[in-house]
Image (cartoon, rainbow, N blue to C red; front, side, top):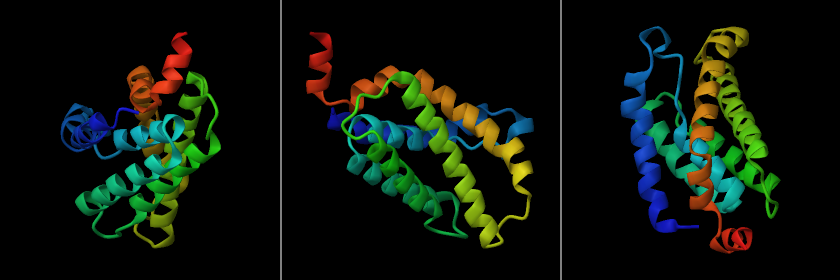
Length: 172
């Protein structure tokens, strides 16, 4: 794992999540698509580095996201990012993860993240929309964006988070 590049890249991804990508989203989809590129990076950390790195990334950037955007309920995104990234790392700890399995886990993690956030907000009466509406109009488009991003950065993320010993064994 090349740790000197991880923090600057995660900060860059957070800035892309919050500044650049919302400008690129079409006007008709604005407010419905939520990019979570840092969460995708936390899932990659869980799959290819270790679960503790994924937990740390999820907690730090989830808290940063909570403070920056979701002031009405702090801790929801911190809890969800950290725990889902940790579970992804726990699920595949010590195992070789293929591209298909990684994309499936990332898609499942993003779905669970958005669905659990909706469930928490619904339980505390922050939102009142039915789940079917949120699923079709917010969760599904966001899921496609996250999965497309995960596919686009698969090779660089794997090289960044995989230990050097594993890569050396593959090349031989």
